[in-house]
Image (cartoon, rainbow, N blue to C red; front, side, top):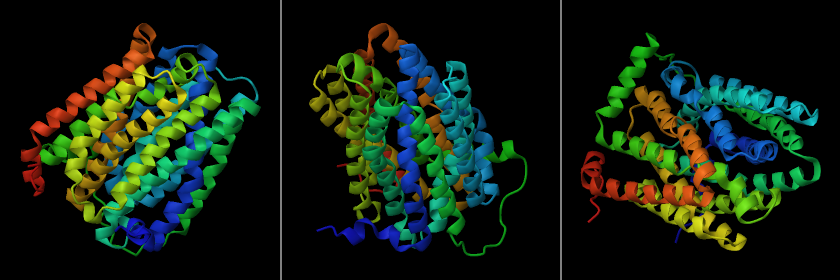
Length: 412
């Protein structure tokens, strides 16, 4: 029987505990902003395509900045990077709040602020993923710490979207952006309170581009790392944009309002938290490769079912199942990569992991928005689910070779 102490064992580390709880309020605000931004854009434009454009603009900077941000995470103190990025996220959210509360919001301005957010995220993500290693005391607790981070991120989805739906209905989207901006203060305070052991300054120096190329060669030379990154990139490209289309599902398919949208996002949060806690409860990351093989199929089947649902209750349950699959793909891939990568290459491989997500999702958002404008959101989501199932089958075909590269047991 799995105990709670085993499931939450990474919290025994003081620094990790500070970081974990410091993020909790900020992540609720992050989900509030995501829901409010999607609803604001669709309210202003009634355009599925522009929903995709805003999603694209917030994530595309990672594609161009990855050579810089991954090396930065290996060359400079990661806590300092995170304090800077969290401060800039706060500025972006408060700016959104001001323009919306003053009633001067425009789509070009929203796209510009989304691009700014994307630039900051490009630096934040690889440093954040690599920072976990510095704040978890026991190496055996690393996979647990990564899973708990995912659990916290998605547990916030249980509160943030529902709260955003209610606040939007009562006072509009601006109050959600304001709440998110203020919530970053807790994360910044936690980062400043963390006590890191003194270490010799071993940050690398040299040409940024050549160091990034070195990281790419390192990843390309490992079949497990290369295969996992490609799977994450493809699943995120075709599958993750379903969240961009949820405002359409909520309003036009289920005939609901902003509250309906918030509840649907919360349903996805339940599934994601369940998946993260399932991974956190596993000792030492046992069987993680099998999870990577099965999870895209779980997500895909759920997405295909969502395309046919016309019931809020059924859609809520289906989204929970789909999110369980998607979260398991992302958190398991993160854990496996962190456990096999060398410390010298950690920041660069984490930037490639970030690139596999943020570099593919914006193009997926554009494609999904365009397809939804012509074929409808349900058909687009069904196609995405089908492709994710196919991706799982392809990964299964190469499982034995990938498992051999990791020293994992075969699937048979």
